[in-house]
Image 1 (cartoon, rainbow, N blue to C red):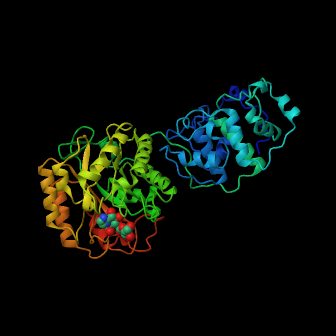
Image 2 (image 1 turned 90 degrees about the vertical axis):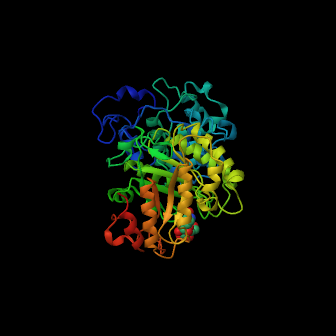
Image 3 (image 1 turned 180 degrees about the horizontal axis):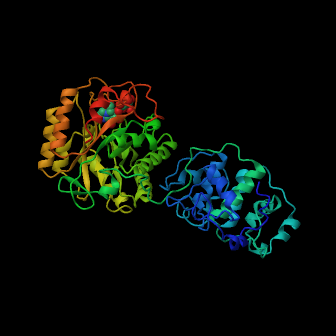
Length: 517
Ligand code: IDC
């Protein structure tokens, strides 16, 4: 394709004037890169920005370029401790030998730096070219600034020239150490795909960084556009103006099992029925985050979808079988740093740092020290987000919190209840916590017993709903899924792709969905 792009990479910017393309506000139909950008974005290999722009002239970072190439090849991320959104892709590319350790050490420090042209070409050729063939004399003669090229890139750059993938600027220079624009990167990658084939593009991989805050496509009453950034005053959750708010909504089930109910359309259906918050439950174990890298992408996409629907989103680090939050404290720290970096400018994100500590642990010896590691890590990036903190015995040990609270502001403590198991005694603990100035958020509750099944315990559920309502407690219900268990809000076999009909609400779902307002 694009055989007419005989123009070289750098010289072309002079030709970028003209009418605007239909797809991006800043990609003219006459632009030399119009078709290429369209093709690359249509394939989902990278995306534009929320304001409708593509920013073709922005430089592309090392992380962005490498992620796109991974995506082209269908390469999955491997584990990485950097906490960077592209850490897994960078380490996968490193393991494949597309670049060497010293070119971009796996500390993440250079990931956000512009990638050098010589390194970009190397990564691309190593990933896509079946062999590196060229005639040294012929190809090197084409590159006027060949002396600037680091010897370690001869092979890949000369092969790329020979294959017609890389070219020089209008002076015949390759500018090996210069950066690459997004439009140029698209052109390079697309030429390589045309030449060598792309094969199995991974359509589930991220369409490469959307660092801009997600803007709602429609606003809703009680939503983020109305209330803005949240804060905690006394025991009350408040909006940006300091006025008390109560948020009510659903928790997902484990997103590794039920991703179909956290799509943008499905969340919209829930919001349209009155919910203004979604909790995205990302298990750490049981096929979750520490077992499967793709779960994080599901979470990101669910959080973005929630924000796009003008609803608040809880990022839930769903520890359960792991018991002690300290078990995965390092992973939690890098995960939350990454999320904070990504959502620091969003007003709608709350962080729930440990779903339900349990087992042979205590608040003061395990959970509090964990919180004292994770909260500062988040706050160093996102200084004022509301953070929800769990406590032992599956979030029923509020008494320990009363005795030894954290010293940060904008913190709420979670209480979780299941109506068939937890009754007046737990409401008494909540009342005691509130009396002692402990802000409580019920980030998970069910109409069933604690197993997620049994019941529905309607009478006790009503008591809890009244109790939460009179104490202005925000809540999320477990869970938005159609699993065969009574806590599921949807009946088995609910179709996730055609909205949410009344007949798809289970007995539990009917009670819950009638309680949002
Ligand atoms: C349950 C699910 C169930 C799943 C189980 C283990 O409903 O389908 O098999 O987890 O993954 C919690 C937990 C929540 C539990 C829920 C019900 O936060 O993950 O979900 N529950 O048991 N705490 C108390 C109850």
